[in-house]
Image 1: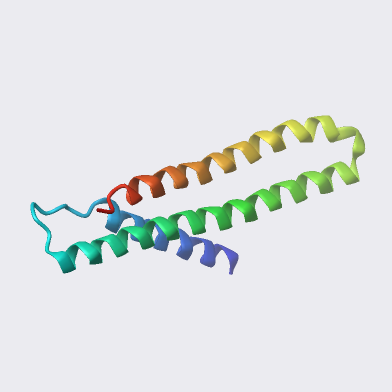
Image 2: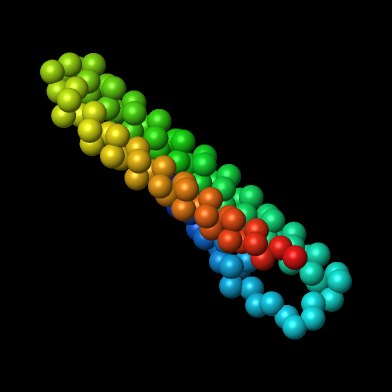
Length: 111
């Protein structure tokens, strides 16, 4: 069930971001059309950051819980578990920061 939810969320976030990212700008957009595009851009940026932050937090929590459980079962392996855990947390956080950059780029399209 978790895989289905994660897959659906990934698909929806990709679909929402790509609509705004690949939208063509007209030479002279109408007043009503420009406002509608701005709303799509704002919603896409908000969904991108919200989904990235939510799933980033979930995955960081799972990584930390697994590492702490491993250290609790074998305290002698704390040094061997801690370094890969910190690297994994940094990589997960880099994906969230990447989504933040994409959200800023989408938000830059708002007129």
